[in-house]
Length: 288
Ligand SMILES: [Zn+2]
Image (cartoon, rainbow, N blue to C red; front, top):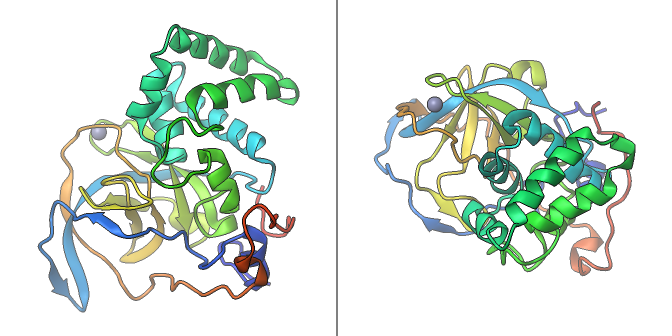
């Protein structure tokens, strides 16, 4: 049986990736801020932003329905941000759902939506997890994640629906996780959606490096990066924009030997429309 951080053919099918086992980045639309490259032992050395160290890993059941996945992500977000609406929007909308925070804040600036949202978040925290679907729905709608009002450049689908069509996690199915990254300068913590290529015990303590400026169609500008430990890639992220302005650029060696190789997916459902195809339910890869 495959290890929990690896995918076999059945897992790829169950996760719903239509072409690759990795989340496609799309075309590069902006170059990195630092484009000078040196080489050491065949590996490129580039200037990167060391945004912090992974000090905990959170697992989500990505196969549950979209609303309950959102509810879990909202709960974890609020553990980090409290009722600070700006931080909620940056974390939940930006780093977990890949949306532009400014667009969400613009949506919330209409009337007294901002205050209503704060009340609903308070209500969510006080509610029983078994009985909070209405509140959760309201919050997803208000932020614009369950509808198409944010007009995301990634897809014509709503942000939640877009992720659902990718197996609810942007990376590697069950390897998708959230990590807590802590800035080594100001010690602020923030949540990042990641794909992990190694088991959790190995990933803990890895450093998260983002490429300033670099943007692809499906990433935030400067939001894509790697988790590196002991000169090995242990994970990656695409929406990992920083929360603090601490200066932390440094030269890093990018280990190329262990980068996961995208695999073609020849399943028939790849030729169907997303409406016709539904994910195969499989709990075999879910970690509690
Ligand atoms: Zn900092």
